[in-house]
Length: 99
Image (cartoon, rainbow, N blue to C red; front, side, top):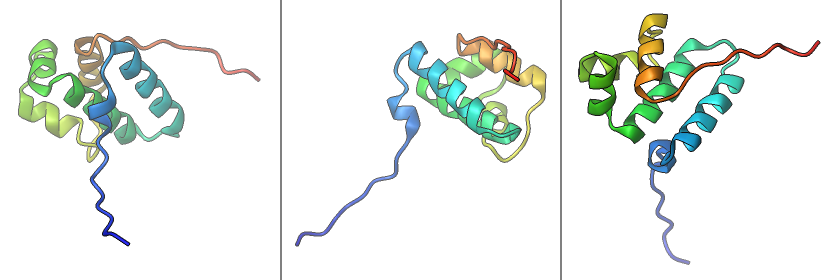
């Protein structure tokens, strides 16, 4: 039997369209369970897929600060999140929870 080789999975390589990016963010928001750093990391994945330098410029942030904010190791400010979401060409929406 041959040796099995594995490679690290990077979701950013599979986020090609705005629709895929939006679906990924929505799924992550549903799974986050209140964990803001999880959402920040998901936004980081999408930003890497789109091009971190391009997103940083569109959001009015430095590339380095964007990497730090979306690393999943810290909770960026809501203003940063809104800037990044806009720079990604996405928008947030609210929905009532069924009781």
